[in-house]
Amino acid sequence: MQNSFSATPSRPAMILAGVLMLLMTAAAALLLPYANQPTTGSNLRPVLITALAVNNSIIAYLILLHFYVKRRPATGLLGTAFAYSALMSSYQLLMLPEVFPGQHEMQLGSHLSIWLWFARLAGFAMLIMLAMLCLAWQPKPPLSPRQSSGFLLGCLLLAVSLIWLVTQRLPPYLPDLGRLVSDQGDYKALRDSGLLIALLLCWGGALLSVLLVTRLRSAFHCWLALCCYGYLLYLMLVFSSSHRLTVGWYASRFFEQLAATFMLGALLFEVFRLQKRLQSSYSQAYETSIRDSLTGLFSRRHFDSTLDAIRHRPPELARPFTVLMADIDHFKRYNDSFGHVQGDDCLRRIAACMAQQLRDGDTLARYGGEEFIAILDGCDELHAAQIAERIRSAVEQLAIPAASDNPAPRPVVTVSIGLYCQPASPLAEEEHQQVELADKALYLAKHQGRNRVCLLPATAPTG
Ligand SMILES: Nc1nc2c(ncn2[C@@H]2O[C@H](COP(=O)(O)OP(=O)(O)OP(=O)(O)O)[C@@H](O)[C@H]2O)c(=O)[nH]1
Image (cartoon, rainbow, N blue to C red; front, side, top):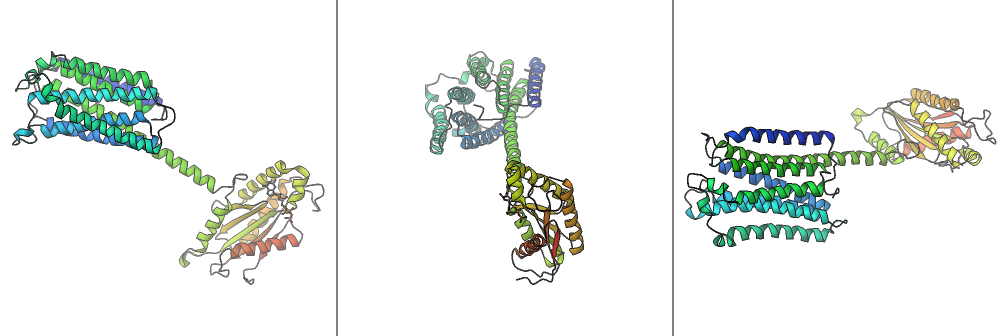
C-alpha cells in the first residue's frame, strides 16, 4: 500500500489537513442556520457541473497515470471512481435544460435528474470503497505491464458499463422520483425520502474505508479522506436546505468543488514531489558518474570531456591552458610495504593535498592507478610551473613515510609532475595530444630522478 502513493505525510501536511478539516466543519456549522435562505444569485448549475466534470477528469487522468507507473490495482480502481464521477457529471451536464434549451429530448425530467444525481454520488462512493477493499487485499507484487493494460481496460469498461446501466437500462424500472423535487426546485420531499440517508451511508462508508485501510499512512490518502469528508459536509448541507439556489444549496456545491480541489492539489503535489526526487536522483547519478570513488576527484571520463570542450572552444575565447600530469613515486614499493588499504589512504591524502593547491576552476582528475591529471585553464608556462612546484612541495610536506626500500634521499612519499602548456594558438592539434605531451614531460621528470617538475616546451615537436 505504501508503494501506491509513497510519501509519508509530513507534519506540516498533517497540520494543514487538520486545519482545513476544522475550517470546513466550522464553515458548514456557520452556514447551517442560513441554509434555507434564498439567494439572488443566478443559476450556476451548468458552470458548477462543468467545473466538477473537468476537475474529476484531470484527477482520474493523473491517478490512472500513477496506476500505469506503479501498476497497483487499487490505484486503477480509484482512478475509475473519479472517471465515473467525471463521465456522469458530463452526461448530467448535457441533459440540463439550461445547456440545450431547445432540445426537448435532451432535457432532464425531475425523475431522471434526481436519479443521475443519486447514481453519480452513490456509484462514486462505492467505487472508492471498492478501491479501498482492493488496497486491503492487494497482492504484494505489482501487476505485470500486460496485466496492468488489461486491468486498466477492465476498469474503464467497468466505468462505462456502470454509466450505461445507470443512464440507459435502469431508469424505466425505477419508482417515480420526479415527485421528490417540484418544478420550483423544492426538494423537501427528497430530503425525507431516504435517498439522502443512503448517500450519507455511502460516503460515511467511503470515509471509514479510507481511514481503516490506509490509516492515513501517505499524504495522498490524507487528502482522499478529506475529500470524502467534504462530500459528507456537502450532503449535510443538502439535507439542511430544501430549495435550489438557497445558501445551503450553493454552500453544498462549494464543498463538492472543494473536495475535488483537495484531490487535484494532492495529485499535483505528488507530481511536483516526483519531479524533485527525479531531479535529485539525476544530480546524484551525474555526480557519481563524474567522480572517482576512491579519491572523490573527477573521473578520467570527465577530464576527457572537459579537455575536449576546452580544445573546441571558439577562437575568440581561446586562451592558453596547461595539462598537468602527476604520478606518485615508487608507489608499488609503498603498496608492497604497507599493503593496499594503506596505499588507498595514501592516494586519498595526496589527492586532497593536490586539490587544495588548485583553483576552483581547474579540473583535477584521477587518471588511473596512482596517476593524476589536471587542466589549468588560462595558465601559461610560468604560472603552471609555479603551481606544479607548489603541489610537489605540498605532497612532500605531507611527510607520509615512504617504504623502507625507497631509494629517495628523503624517506617520504613524493610525486613527479609533467607539464605541457598549450598556447592560445594551438600547436598540438590532434585529439589527446596535450595529454601525450604532458605524459612525455612526466616521463622526463621520472627519468631525471623523480620528485620534480618537468615542463615540455610548447615549441617541442608534436609528433
Ligand atoms: N593501493 C592502491 N594501489 C594502486 C591503485 N591503483 C594502482 N595501484 C598501484 O600503484 C602501483 C603502480 O606501480 P608502478 O606503475 O610500477 O609505478 P611506481 O611503483 O609508482 O614507480 P614509478 O611510477 O616509476 O615511480 C602498483 O603497485 C599498483 O598496484 C589503487 O587504487 N590503490
